[in-house]
Length: 157
Image (cartoon, rainbow, N blue to C red; front, side):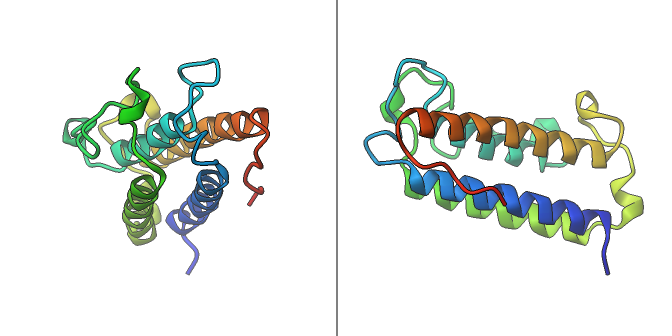
């Protein structure tokens, strides 16, 4: 049966595929390298995407232990402390699976109810769309940065 949650899960799957491919396309020497902009570092952006999806997948904003996963905030200026690609991919898979399960188990009625993240919109549906838009925005930054560095970006899915 097709539900709103199934459709959203499918769209997130496409984003995860692209993010996984972009991470894989990033050469090891470029993963944590500051190439002229402290923010546009592939490891920083990937970490920010995944951790933010983790945050918005929770029941409440108070449930998120920011920076706990790797012991470092994604905004750190100490880029060597940012996670390597393999741990990042493990985190991606964990959050991907968790979100997929949550979305696929939701009824249409449940996804149209309110939630405790009001700045994202009035309903859970709006929160999920907000999260997907946020993820794609930063994935676009990774894509542009990979290309600027002479690397291949992910294919569109």
